[in-house]
Length: 184
Image 1 (spheres, rainbow, N blue to C red):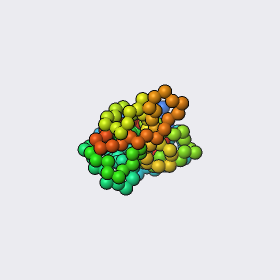
Image 2: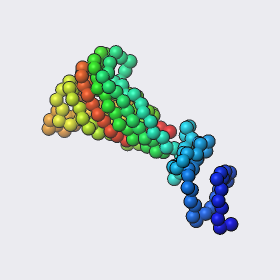
Image 3: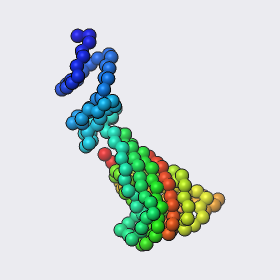
Image 4: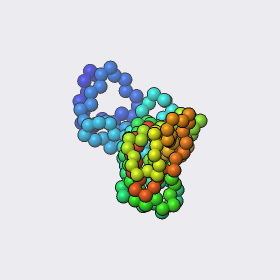
């Protein structure tokens, strides 16, 4: 048949066509079709073919200063988009009182990162910071792999390597964006 018109079509095996037009939405797996776009199921269904897109998700998360601590916040939020195993994040933390929290790391990424043996370390651009505990010429966030944590590294001037700064203090503000590879 050259043309098929239907309001509801369920395909249970492969379809080969040279031209496919969908005028509303497509649902993958157990997802519910929406008006427009492609709907993925709420739980990722992994496939072994590396050329198959098996996950798309966007949402929010709550980043915190690392560790079981008494840090309080003026604001804290995170946004993410996950496409396959790549996770794109925006992070904003404004510390009210550091309490006994970490001075150099954040936790709470929405997905555990891939082990360091599977990927290069992810880096996070620091877009803005204020009221830190020191003066820095360059500041960057990075992930060591296999965690949901972001560590900070900095330089204070013309040096040959970066160090871990004592960054967070009462009133510290930091904005980061970055991308990392999720473990699954």
